[in-house]
Image (cartoon, rainbow, N blue to C red; front, side):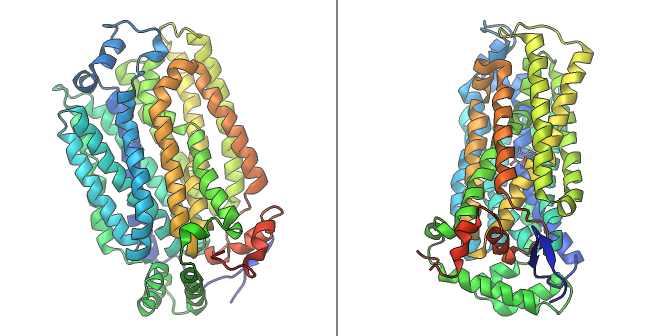
Length: 510
Ligand code: BGC
């Protein structure tokens, strides 16, 4: 064993292996799973702001929006539970499927879970593109949700297992980058399809979701299974060959030995779902719940899902709303690249904290700007170009703060802190909590906007303060620590050491 890696003053192992072309391609293909997720996050907001779509499926909202029917005030124009169900139903289905895919990932491997995800996704996209009534729309969204549950369960784990630990952060973030590209592409397509003269552009927006689905199916067919997963399923020889190919060196003995040891420890745990509640896994359980919860409570998805609706509510025209959503989408993708470049250099904690401060400041500015213009009654008033530009500018800065902190780290940190024996179960909890709160925000956003008005952003700003304090106090730095060595990090943390110390003495099943 050469050298060592330092994090929190902890000396870990230094496995051999470089960033081979095989690893890179593997991670790129796997990260396409993120495209699926991103496209769906980004597509529904634009579609729900298109008049022909509203007129066909949600005539009430259409009439309120176009002042055909009276509406109490500006903030409530889009307040419709069935409309938000169109966006949110996907996340409910994703929640169910991520729970089931924990078993599929463990027993059949990460790859097969990805392929199943792609198939669900394709079916959902087709149903949506040909929808004739609300139920076809909602069932289609649910099929997409099943696909997303599978992809979000398997892809981050797969990438973390295959990546050499020194590059794990950056490679894992390809997943988030793909999410943001998916959102951005959705924003661009919404903008162009909304201009179609026959009013059927929304069908193309929804149907295009089939493209990333096909990409992940084909990609995953060619991916090798990860060595950890092969060992977990008793195929040690194949795992050794795969590890040598992935690392580009035959000197993988040390890493292989540790992977086998981790797998044996994992087999000793017969009931990962029970084991995860043991005292020794308290830090992992805490983060598996807290990180996705807080990620959603940043309020980012108000922008991701409903930017065009929000922009329309505050007085932008239809085209300007879709255009502004495209700008925020672009900032999201670009800022994620910054995070990819920095994460393995400056570490996770600094990015989390800087992002939190930036989001907080922007939320306060946006609140004040909307309050000054629309007041409590939401009087409809035209926005000057400068005022609109100022608002979009601060929304972009807010999005960038999220995009180099909670966005990518919300997936990276959980995926690297779970030991193999509880990895699938813990990742399921992580994805499920994320989906529950994504669902909640998607479902209640228009009602929140109607009742909380401009105060909506203050609500999220309070959570940003709480989450940043939580990270500051409880998250140890995980940069540069091999996954199988992560226990050292907990053992040297002033709070978590009280829980993890007893690892050797405890029977993991107790
Ligand atoms: C989150 C999504 C969010 C996206 C925005 C992801 O990490 O899980 O909820 O919409 O980032 O880029």
